[in-house]
Length: 403
Image 1 (cartoon, rainbow, N blue to C red):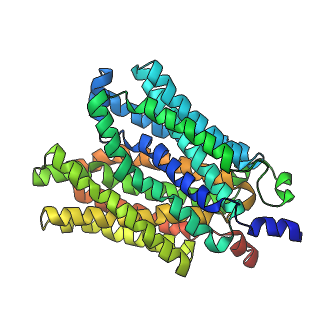
Image 2: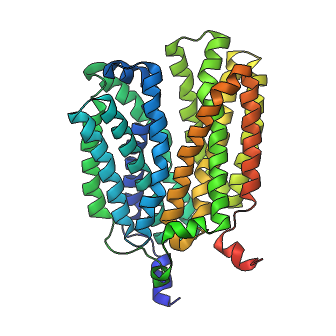
């Protein structure tokens, strides 16, 4: 590698702080579109004239659409990261637009799927861009800071969306978020420089990015690791509200208040991950998060036996634990296949969707036997995820231990 190439990697983007602010703000927007479906699912169903089972099908199809993400993001390992981010936002805006003009159930499914894919394409391209342009010592911190958009989307944006829906109807969030998406594109065009990714021209010689991912055992291990821990989280998270309602007789409003604990846990986890990354590194941070997740999963039924406060404490600890590996995996995997970062990050985001879909399918059946079976299944999946983590090797680890 030449000195010029090396310096291009070690130099921060010109507008580093503004980029962090912009990326975090866009993540609040795109994640809010994904997360608003859960609290307002019945409202969307009534607006579209379908029952709860039918409207739930829209979410299942949306999650399954994530399998398309790695095939889209792999394109941007040979093109600019900026193009990937713009494409992601373009898909997001298209999804908002189609349902605004044609508010039918089929188009609603299309809108959820387009905005979901767009969200993942943007995030994968953005994190690949950060990995290419931000020095390794502060890269993890930058990725973690932008991850606050995920937590803030639940704490800040979703309540605002609730206000819009209550005042103007179920369709109102879509045109508003579409306009904000258009504004975001103008800021991306202004801040993010043109050109190819800021790594060596050796990247131009590699094979198609998605092929690299699925022919690398360590990359496959990373993808499976995420699939397992996302399935584990969904197995508990999907039925947690039903369990609390059955056990403590909570109203819908009380459940909504109780669920704000999730947002607070997610915000706290950002600080925890930042501390762990700085002192222990990404791989150890993920490992600690997975062990913590397994322990808190089986602790939930026990804590719940002490009453509502115990159940809410269990919810808080479980989501705090889960967010640690969920945030820390990105800094880790950016160093597994440096020349196919967007492809690998796209594949991992697809595995998030598939893992959640599988967890959602299993959760009701396990819950039929009792919530403790959901907790035990989640613990087992977290431990399997921990095992697959042991097979994930960064490029430096592969170089030091080629065997």
